Amino acid sequence: MALSKAQQAKADAYLEKFMTGLKRRNAGQPEFHQAVHEVARDVVPFLQDKQAYKDAHILDRMTEPDRVIVFRVCWTDDDNNVRVNRGTRVQFNNSIGPYKGGLRFHKSVNISILKFLGFEQVFKNSLTTLPMGGAKGGANFNPHGKSDGEVMRFCQAFMSELFRHIGPNTDIPAGDIGVGAREVSYLFGQYKRLENEFTGTITGKGLAFGGSLIRTEATGYGCVYFAREMLGTRGDEIKGKNCLVSGSGNVAQYTAEKLIQLGGKVLTLSDSGGFIYDPKGIDEEKLAWIVDLKTNKRGRVSEYVDKWGGEYHEGKRPWGVPCDLAFPCATQNELEEGDAKTLISNGCQLVSEGANMPSTIEAINIFIDNKLLFGPAKAANAGGVAVSGLEQTQNAMRLSWTREEVDKQLLDIMKNIHRTCVTYGKDGDFINYVRGANLGGFVKVADAMLAYGVL
Ligand code: NDP
Image (cartoon, rainbow, N blue to C red; front, side, top):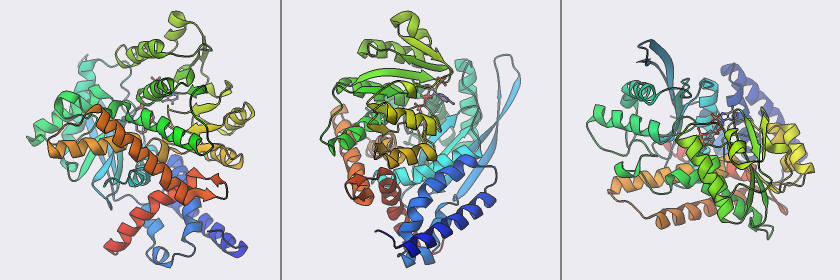
């Protein structure tokens, strides 16, 4: 709905007042402010003619987590030193299903980051159409350089407190940055021991103990499926396109794999040290080497150049390399205004976000102003949590679906999310996927909250 000038002015004034209050109540949480602002600037104008939502103060309620659990995690390192970290679980909203969202172990973890991630998760999970609420958690624990024994003791200590707050019908955590297959296994093992039951309370599990085929690949594959749908609206395809991928962890690896399978040429990957640029393209053999390096050897991407050639750019991000398509798959705020301008001036047509909130608001504005095909994280990377939802279903049914079956469901879900974004985001001949994802995710949760009355 196009607003009149007076309605728009009213919405702008309300947005400013709302954000001022939110910032005051959540002081020192810039990532959370950013995530809320990105949603509120679409939702506030949408609410202008929706009195029921306004009367129920839905937006105020949706930006306040149901609860935040903070706990001490005490463990011993290999030299028998006592170490103390802080564990947190933000249970943001369970209006449409049990809380669901990953755990992040990284030295940068703080309440602002976990609240931004939990808030985003509410919308993302709603978009998948599966019955999942939103949550996020983690700890300021840095797995880099820790032995397997240290990681195991940390995970067991973390779960020794978290277990009392989660369950198959309450809250189902999963992995995220720093929490891969190894950590999920330690966490689930401890949960199972403490509860003396075998339920699918964590997703991303190993295949031998309740994991789903395609879960490892799902976020990256889904991100590329979403990009393919976006390109399809302009009669275009991935084949033959030069692609930039950032990160070299789980999401980046499988984004690159699917791009290669669909005929794209992957030019870059990165980690927190810098990025590699291979003008010949990172093919399947080179990618398999990187997956082994990052997943098993826990090495650095800089090692690629000695083995395969190309260039390593220390301390830099890949966005200056000319490309057709860009896939930020590392971390939040890794693509800023200047990067967005560079991408556009170099001819980039599409950005599909594999990571959570990798583009700053200023960068997003540039993409939208230039009518780029821009797939925001809550839509483009929802494939991971969608297959986590499918893992829960398989666990509840005590069944394992085939690879083909799960991949087909993933593809269908990404197509549905794309369709929802088009429904809510169509603006003349341009599709504003940010607005589409925000409103599409919002309506379902808001309607459930309205139905419950004042809670
Ligand atoms: P991983 O831990 O597997 O990989 C993270 C990658 O990002 C690594 O290459 C890491 O480099 C790099 N990285 C981390 N922090 C920074 C930083 N500050 N600057 C530059 N690079 C950095 O995590 P995932 O691949 O699972 O997650 C990546 C992103 O995708 C996150 O935003 C996550 O929230 C999001 N996501 C993940 C999902 C999943 O299913 N895994 C689902 C939906 C979203 P290094 O090796 O040096 O640490």
